[in-house]
Image (tube, rainbow, N blue to C red; front, side, top):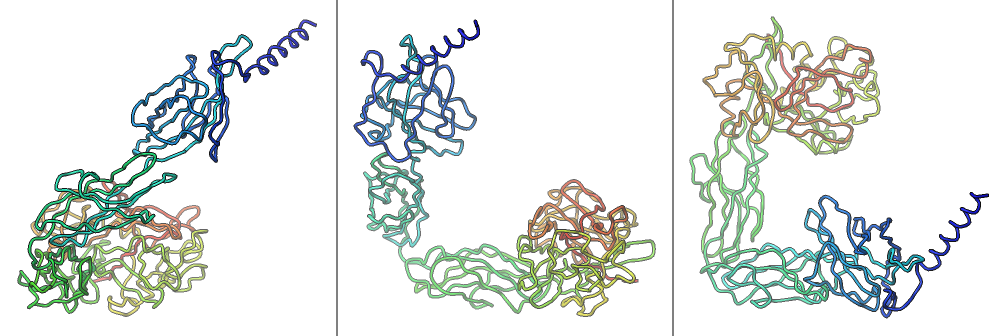
Length: 619
């Protein structure tokens, strides 16, 4: 009976509180709720109590403190503030963002408006607007919370980026801006400039009425041979004028020869290379020809070997052909206008050595009685022509483009599933372009067989003719797990040095040193170990090691299906040996190195794509 009476009393108290918690009374008690402005789309109504409960606004937890103040719970990486807008007629009447009055806590008052601001760790600023309709009171007319309306993510502070200045002449230049301003009304877009940093619209400026997020404008009336600063800007109703970052440029002096830049030389082979260059300025007169020139003596001009590619300003590439192998060349960009020829500084590169049948000169012991020579580069394959080749340079690797592997791909790949030579070994996947990663046991010979003896044709180098490796089947093969172990840890060399980790022309990997390696050829740190950064070797220095017999295994990563991983970090190469353990029909051995840590062999699913480096017996 007592329990029943208590329950009835409790129910009456709850109903009493509920019946008055949102009641309206006089202004002295803190009531309100006028709605002179239409609620915007996305308006949410919520109740907040100062004895518990919260709402999520701007990704943060908004509560009311015991002192009846709005507060945000602390969150790492976010700064959240309020500004009290005072009495307003409704949520939709809050239309502007003040520049002052921000604080971490503000008093809650009916018929009043508020703006909440969130600044995340990346500097993005977002706003929400809040309107308090009335207090919530208990049976004793004590304030226990408030009813509010809010619009979350109302505005994001605009981001304005100043574009690089282009088409610079003696008295004009082209600038522009890129704008990100969701839900913000922009009344003007423009650029402003002056000879002093951080110009404003009080300085020289020009604008466009076009509603474009990315716009360009021309600055005119500039002084020749003068330095300027420029900023993009927008005008808004909510935030006023918002400026982009400061960019600087200089106008040209009297017309002159073009200004050019030589960036780098890539795709170096025995007889060709590609140079990337640009025309940065036409010198005040249109560029009628641009290209690169090269020779073997230094300071090349257009009277030497040269090749053009188009006209005007901007970046361009030129393929240099007819080069001699193992030769150092000097190259630089040039451009021609009516005033003359403009040149950049000279850079050098060395073409690849033309190794007979793709075989490097160094000899390596792989057992007590057997020695081999390595191929000039990792094995590569083109499915559209069914062609195998060796990479032209030892540090060449294909990387992310291995993800395009398919039976019709007309590019090159260099990551292969185990035993994918193209010889039908009785398994499901044996083609070089196989990329299925469902079951590793569907690759290579069925069962516990290595790529030798009756299954030697599963070896890439045995079954296939390599286009730049003698072009005949049976000339090459893959080292077994035991041979790799002997090569790395057991063989005797003249000075006891077998390998080291290094970085060759920006590519990480492992250098294998021949049996007769003499350290006087090139000083290498951390022999038989080390880390990639211990030996930084330039493209110009590498031929010295290569001619002396050094082999470089680039850290070309691996492929799982069509996903590429560990580029320039993991150095992994298949062996010809299956994994002799419980589930050996689905796994095989590969040799594996990483930075400052290595293992002579590991096992992996045969479907995983690793690098293949072939060898040729010399005895």
